[in-house]
Structure formats: C-alpha cells, structure tokens
Image (cartoon, rainbow, N blue to C red; front, side, top):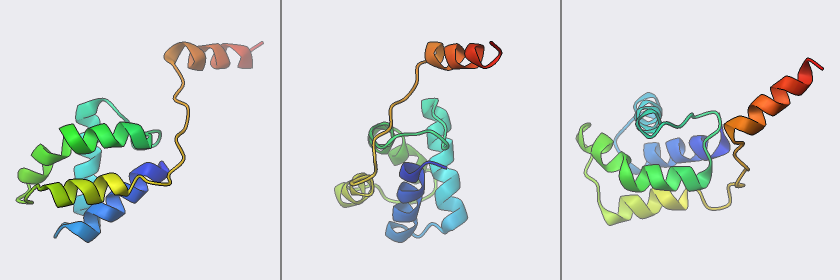
Length: 100
C-alpha cells in the first residue's frame, strides 16, 4: 500500500469510531469510486477523495462529517512524498522494452 493510503487510514481510525478494518475498507471503497488504487494513490489524489468521496462514505457508516474531521484527514497527508504517476503510455512503453 502507498504511504499516503496508510497514513489516511490510521488518521481515520484515530479520528472516528471506525476500527482498523472498517477504516481501511471505507478508504478502499472511496478509492474505487474515484477510480484509484490503494497501492499507487498519491497524497494529492487522496486530498480530492477526502473532499469529494469520503463525506458520503462516512455518512453511510454513521460517522458525522465536519470541518475538523476534514482538516485532520487532509493533514494526515502532510509530509508524505508526492510520487510521479505514470501515464498508461509510459507503463506500456516500459513493458514493451522488457521483451527487447
């Protein structure tokens, strides 16, 4: 899992009544809705998920969304290294060069 994913899950677990499994599952479902993967998600991508997807996901689990919770979750991404995300073309180009 990406460091960004791990940090968000830990923060969500500390800031809400969700246990570890529920916090991780909630974040994974949110990522899936956004078309992202826990293995490669970046801090900037997670900030969008926090703003746009998690409020609905948490509400469906009985967790009240508020500005304090949003700030705490967004702050969990501070200091996590932003990685470059490869385009599909770059991935296929790398894969093509393996056989050569």
